[in-house]
Length: 358
Ligand code: SF4
Ligand code: SF4
Image (cartoon, rainbow, N blue to C red; front, side):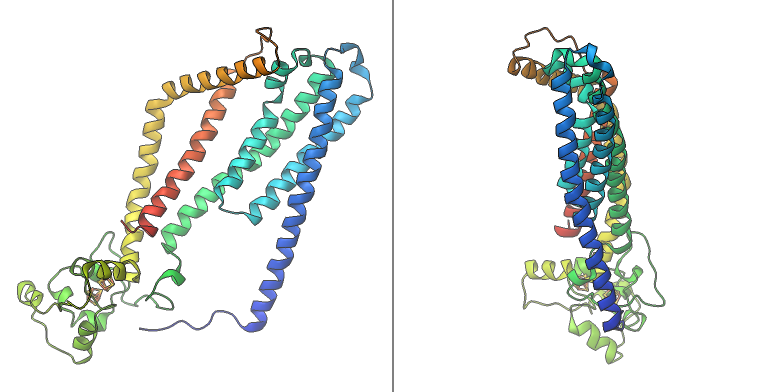
């Protein structure tokens, strides 16, 4: 077993920590200032919508100049809020949902405002709702980018590292062997952490078995290591070699299984499982969404219709509102919901393979 040296000196560590501290402060400033700017500018835009609803004569007022100003502040505020919150809460599912939903809420303002205020679909009021839509579009692109980047980085990290090294009982500091093999879904002796010196005297290797199935191996059973240290001869015949596989009756099967869950060798195997499962999840998800797209669209229409009825009831507008959420907007919303579900499907896969170790 060889160990890696400490990666950073004390000074380097201090510089890195200092830099991270500065970045965190900047992110906090961006997040809170962005949130404040977004709320203030949004309040003004909503105020203009209410104030100018049904007053087409006021089209040329100075309010249009203010609307343009607050649209810019809202766009900048949302971008600052998204960038700051993405840095501070990277990988948190709720942060991505907040970003997507707030962008959607701004983007669909010209659709739902006329439902609440029937006369807000003309004049300056309409300009204000379109200002919100433009701000929502720019912010939505950033939010979708953050979500996609998070998904891609998570998949890349899992493919490279599997599970964090410090979570492994035997794994911290262990280097991969120079004669490493990495056979996809291979047995323990076909994976990078099988050490040549031990392998040559290992009964599991000569029996062509797999240590995690036998529940004993070079990372957990001293007899295997002792055999290698003492240069104990193991028959080359698989059946004869199997008789040399040590038995450990001092601990229970559950304890042995837990031991494997903490082991680098087994976790390397889990990484392979993840690599195998990932395309299946992706293809399966696309296939399910493809098959269910029409019924999901119908559900979406139903939900949007119910929300519209609810708003009409709450605002006592009766059936006077003729504004409908366009089909394309409903499909965009459905696409965003599917993207969020896909992110959660990946989280579930990670949980099953890297936490539960199924
Ligand atoms: S138990 Fe260890 S040494 Fe033996 S074959 Fe498996 S990985 Fe190699
Ligand atoms: S803990 Fe499990 S995976 Fe690791 S060497 Fe032992 S039997 Fe193999």
